[in-house]
Length: 314
Image (cartoon, rainbow, N blue to C red; front, top):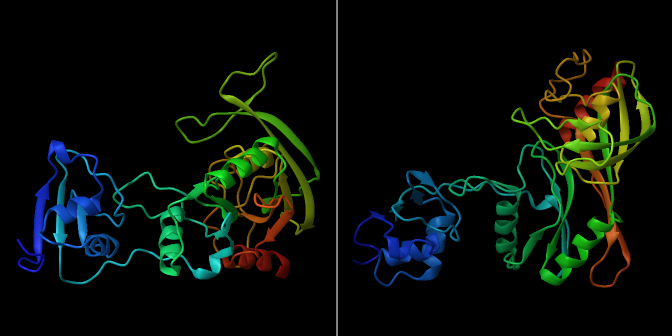
């Protein structure tokens, strides 16, 4: 069957085809279909896997999965990453200013809308390689700000070692409820429970395996009556670390319903708070190629700046 005979074609993955890429399976459905055409059909949302659009041509198909290809018709645009979000790129590292609300990776292979997928498309559009892009740390989906990604295994090993040695400087600007105090918070955080909350271990002796030390330094930048702007330096990088430490100090993060739900937000702040007001505004590390220190800053995003301006204007 030629690639232009039928505009729509559906087929199920056989046991012997399980594990091949989606692009390879699409190509197998037609005679003489070029790789570039198969990949483009995936990237434009014209391929569905069990009824859901799958934009990733490298997705590995499973036995029994139903794949449908639409050769003509409207394209489904995969969300693109604003080019301004890529703060820096060279052959060794990439620094990105992650938007709030975007997960770093996706748990759904059929709908891989995440930072990594958008970065891969952005690099592909630039003609740059994205196959060697490696995560070395993460931010929660709701959190905005700077992340470093390594390009290639040698660079990844060197950057990961810096994170293990805790020599990477990471600063966050945070809006909290109440009058914050400067200080150092140090506690062992427990793995998140079914509610998604991370508790703290307060026992004696050696902590359990699911309790990891978390250390945060807090500096107060400004106080606005009912709220404060603080800068946090994370010595460690545990999940929810800043949110737990600040909530335990009696100054929960504004917009944090998980750890600050018992606290009413300040009034008249110039807009609704839709997420925890945390922004990773600074990161510094040794460049894996030459070992010299490099640092990067990211301005506050619009939603954070709007709330901050509202607090200042009151």
